[in-house]
Length: 246
Image 1 (cartoon, rainbow, N blue to C red):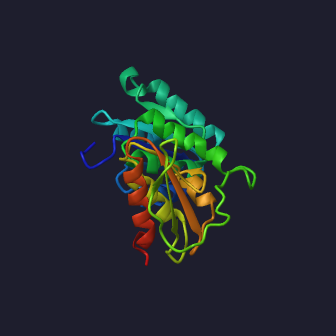
Image 2: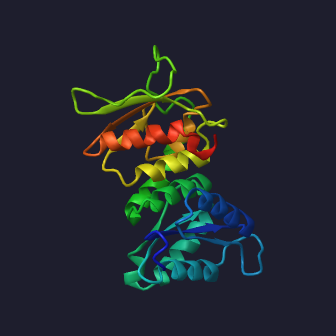
Image 3: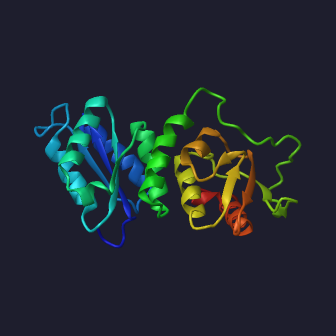
């Protein structure tokens, strides 16, 4: 693995080569610094899974000491991934995790988390949390913005508990869709702070997308931690700039 890649790679195991490659393309757009290897279809590109393809992808992803999170689409793909892991030497197998996660959403969430330099267990947790993010409508809490007048960004204010809060207005025409949500998560990753936007975890691209925020919506940004003020200031600046889409 070269220095340009994040320390954790993804292997996407699907019964369809087209599905695996498509999911890899989507996730790669959200996290260009992560190695994402599709391993879909049988050896003759039929529907099914191939031990050899999955094994080759895992070997490539772990070359040089990297770690891997494997995502699968259906039950038998899990069996293939488990068979590969059982045949892998112990030192390498210790760096591989098989996620119980939705295939596409999990791949996107894991890729964005990996892009920030997270370790393999953090990337695994992000993938598996994706299955809980898109539950029944209304299950993700949103911070109230009642009484907030959308007049642009307000200066960060430090609360009695040390948290930092600011408001801003979403300016990009398409709202908080996948690309700006991923940019937000990647931008916040280096800061030592826990940030929320309208009550959801700003470290989760899927939770941000589920807000359904559109142009001119007010975003309430809150943060806690040693770099809370810096994180809030940077996030507000990026929102005001329209994530490069304005």
